[in-house]
Structures are given as C-alpha cells and as structure tokens.
Figure 1 (cartoon, one colour):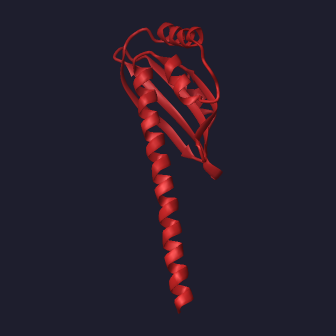
Figure 2 (spheres, rainbow, N blue to C red):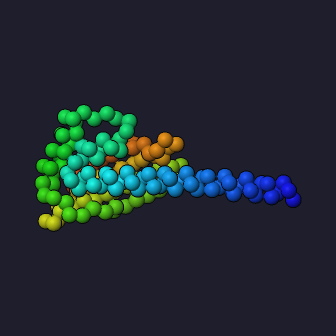
Figure 3 (cartoon, rainbow, N blue to C red):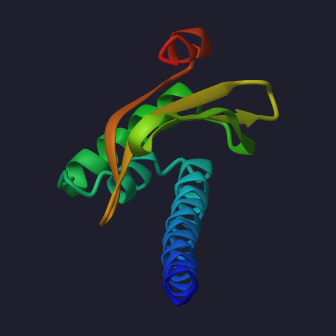
Length: 139
C-alpha cells in the first residue's frame, strides 16, 4: 500500500510539472502571437518575422524590405486581425493561418508552421500574401 501511495504521489507531482510546463509554453506562445499581431497591424512585417524566427538574423535592410512589401501590398491601416485556422499536429507541431484586414476590405494572410521544442517554438515555414486559398492549401 505504501508503494502505491508513493507511486500516486510521484505521478501527481510529475503530472503537475508537465501541466505547468505546457501552461508556460502555451502562455509564451500566446504572448508571442499577440506581439506578432501587434507588429503586423502596424505594418511592421519585418519586425514581426524577426521576432518569431529566432534562428535567422535579419539586418535593418531586410526588415525594412519586408515592411515595404507589406506597405505596398496593403497600404491602408489594418482595423482587425484574427486566427483563420489553427491546427495542433503530432509531436509538438502546429500550424496557424492569421488574417489582417482593412476598412476597405483588403486582406493579408500569414501562415506559420512551427514546432514546440524545449527552448520554445521553432518556425519551420512562414508564408504570407493576399491569396487565402493558397495558404489554406498548406493545411
């Protein structure tokens, strides 16, 4: 009986630790997504991509070039953003399709494929544009 009680206590501690770690990663993901959305809403696509692609170094010229792409693609201010589709895949992989829109009805989409690792999320594929069908086809 003592072994069972000890095992149950150990299981409870391990489960709590895993749950806490998952909660922390989810909180980290949500905070990162909120910062990403805020930057895109301000037409700062370069800064947004630089924020989430930690394995790549973007220089000022690269960041400004990405910002220019967004400003030329959708020159008006964004008035809203939302997650169009989100899919948790196996073994820590996940996909997100994000949408941003203007008052005039122009839309801009960002697709992200990422993998959750011990040190956070690694972005494996990032695509963007105005063609929602093309990006939905990645799901």
